[in-house]
Image (tube, rainbow, N blue to C red; front, side):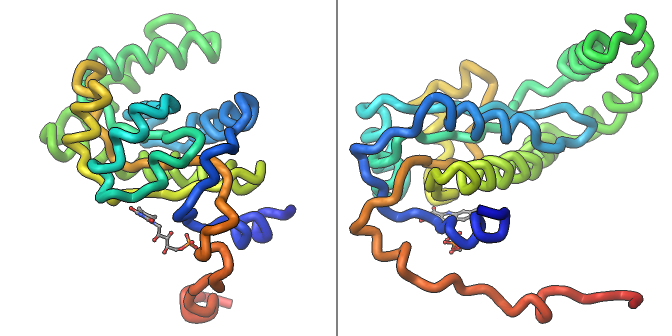
Length: 211
Ligand SMILES: Cc1cc2nc3c(=O)[nH]c(=O)nc-3n(C[C@H](O)[C@H](O)[C@H](O)COP(=O)(O)O)c2cc1C
């Protein structure tokens, strides 16, 4: 399948077949795709929490406006913003870059200072919002990876973040839930798979400046 065929095949799955499980290999591909997302300064201010025990998945349903996907899916990936982005975190990422790129320790001190100036000038609320915007890039990467390996998914904002944070102990990990991606395999009963995609014509979506 080429990329556009895969994107046409993908749809926001409303009913998963609970008997079908995503393989460890495909799950790894999806998570690595999320990890490869571009982020501001490469700081990756988020983590992915994978829920795959049925009891917890069932408990998520009432906190998801009773949407059944979180219970039926093979795995529920909760994309969560870090609430602990501080100077030390930014310096740690600079050290990691030096290590991976074989640079002398301290080489990126100036750059770290610049990042700290930009990121720590935000209020706590703005910094979480900054992290959350980037989470959506990871979300898109994961959805694309799912479609490429033939795994169904449903991006979901229809949930109560505070309740997810509480149930999954996200506060202890300095995280807050931002968006959820149940993954698995579509149920034959999911009528949504038969519906035509509704999109504006591409020529109405694009404004060309120049030639
Ligand atoms: C940020 C975001 C939040 C969404 N939240 C939900 C949700 O809570 N429940 C749901 O069933 N679909 C949700 N959707 C799916 C959209 O309704 C769906 O992507 C859109 O109608 C286009 O349909 P398609 O993805 O099947 O092509 C969400 C999509 C996005 C991108």
